[in-house]
Length: 114
Image (cartoon, rainbow, N blue to C red; front, side, top):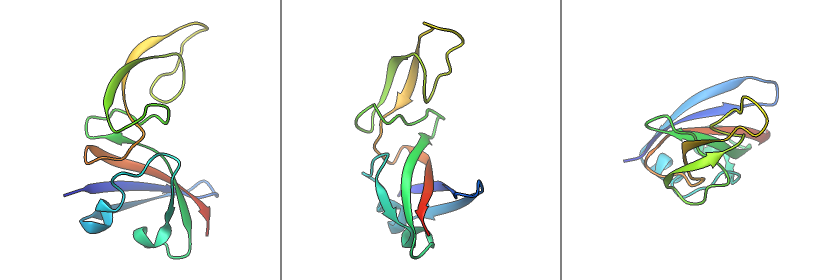
């Protein structure tokens, strides 16, 4: 059974944590980074939420440019999962794909419309 911790960020810089379990959490499986959700699933009726990222049970971050729900090791030069210490610095890092699976624990969302 799926269980997710949702971190919902608002436009005023605050964030709210919500835990979803059971069929409400199962509705998020298969969604991608960038998808829009109805806020009534999380108890925020009348609002629109956008998925911005997340991390799996071992702490590896989700990346928008890795397709599927897989865990892969790719060479990164900057962005989610790696911060370059200088120009031209690259490193192989393990990241998750952009699809929410049962392996994902935390999902980051932002409020687009209240």
